[in-house]
Length: 125
Image (cartoon, rainbow, N blue to C red; front, side, top):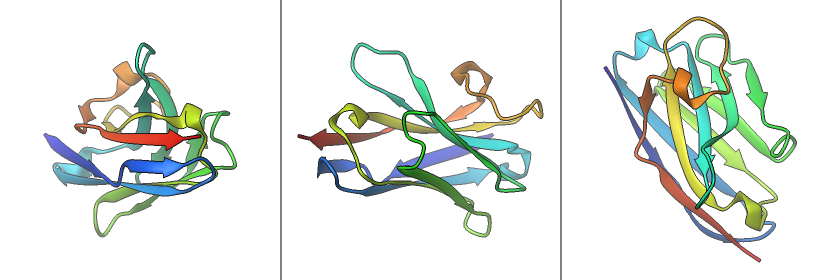
């Protein structure tokens, strides 16, 4: 089992920045990739960014490319999501997730095995 705990959400004005953290514990050696997802009211959960746990290679949704940056600190078993130039449409609950299956970094929530509790990000206009 892997436990994930997010932190760092909050309220920010449009154009501002926030950094989310996701601390992993437990059987972290089983993690293949980590992803950040978000879910706005009435919408499906969507992929935001992902990172390979070992190599650090990253992938981003088009909607956040150039504004968000995902990174990891293997020594701390922590993944970060730096969010800059935030827009009101970025408002959502943000979740981190861990994937075990070594089939490539997945954009599909169903491919992820472990999830954090979520943290609210609200961007005011």
